[in-house]
Image (cartoon, rainbow, N blue to C red; front, top):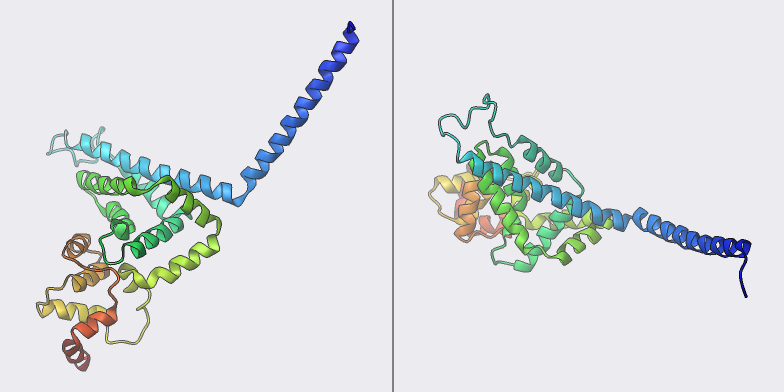
Length: 264
């Protein structure tokens, strides 16, 4: 049977209509998928993580270039070609206040619990980020950025998917990081001790150090209260445990605690 021109046109029109229908259905499916909170969470975690890593890399590259400049003038911000890492720091600050940071708090807590008493670098991830922000020297900032980027060597694709999934349940993630706060010595001093009636534990730590007590756990509490990153790193290297509670320190130095409390 030979098809006439009108038949061919009708057949082509029918095929086009079918294709258009499938395209429309697929577009609707994609639109619904993109609109889901799970998809948006996954994309947000990937995007925020990429922005953070790019900022760290930018600081490292600028730090490398900084070392080639004249030591006498490289810190002069008035130079037309002075190296400025403030844009990268702004990106890091943005990460710290993003919802993705919640996913990373949850991730770091899980890594910390899994490690138990073993060393786990993710315990000081956020402390290192803030230390980098406070670092004025470009080279020192580059060193901190390198430490942070190195941490991501241990983050797998499954870890990122897990963080994305956790962020999809934002309420659950918030509850988890609040629940895990008690195991974080770096937060304990500022939050769980705030407003409690006690013979100031922070002052007791200072008292112990004044007595010449050389205890890495005591030093870790002190570094947390005084934002002393170098002491925190040293204390962790000497065996300080982030899971140590204030009560353990009081029991460990019971006689000194009684003496200190009596003097208050």
